[in-house]
Image (cartoon, rainbow, N blue to C red; front, top):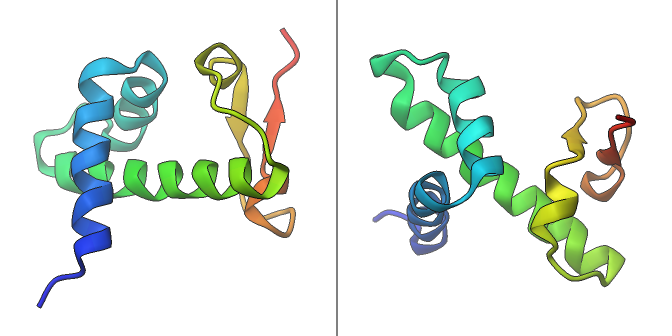
Length: 90
């Protein structure tokens, strides 16, 4: 039996691709605009949404889409998902 939480996150990712510019950019970066990588890119976006949600909960902050345009998700160099979100310097 599939996990309901994982399915829900993937559905949220597909919806975010349609309605959020930030999510669309993350999705296109992961898919490389290849038809065979659409599902993998959606799952990667679902994980990214989960990491961002966890960071918001830990920092006790609210979602602000304007801030997400300036946020860069870093690699595994820093411990903890909440420390991966750092604003980009324009």
